[in-house]
Length: 189
Ligand code: GAR
Image (cartoon, rainbow, N blue to C red; front, side, top):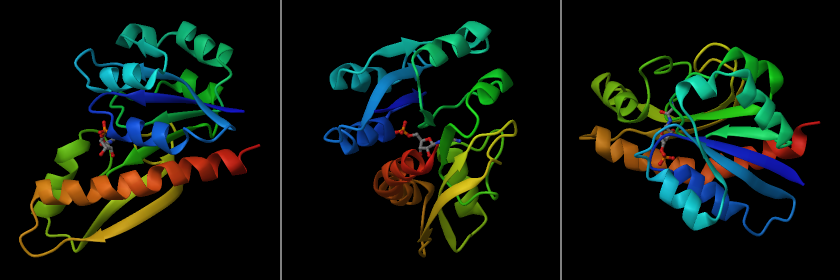
């Protein structure tokens, strides 16, 4: 049995999709959802999905206790699904190649601090890029710069707005993020 921990900060559409994707897979279970935002709709989703939910403050998140807790849960893969805090070094060291993130653009462009959610789509549309997409990557000490696992592309059309692009990116995320997670689980030692 592979055990996932899903970290969230917002709406949780990726959390929902991942949970549904693996719901009939006896080899994968979501051990918990870790959330840093008391206003996140992800909280409702975790409750409705019946997944244990852990709310965290920044101090808790950056503590050694948190790393110990995650280790005691025997987590095989930490999935950042719209989680907006930087991951502390002690957690990265404790879970080498066991933390993946989804980013709503084609890294290395439009990545790094400040590039999240709609800010990414605004920047891509303002730059009149021909394409955008999603990147699933391992997490290392530098924001959005770990090894890339999967990218999927989509074309920008005439009159594209940040909102219309966000909808396209959302579809890509729903299609490809669970598949990328499944691939990582199958290939990890
Ligand atoms: C997703 O679009 C994800 O790619 C993005 O936040 C959104 C979360 O949506 N992540 C980042 O921008 C990370 N830098 P969700 O809460 O509905 O899954």
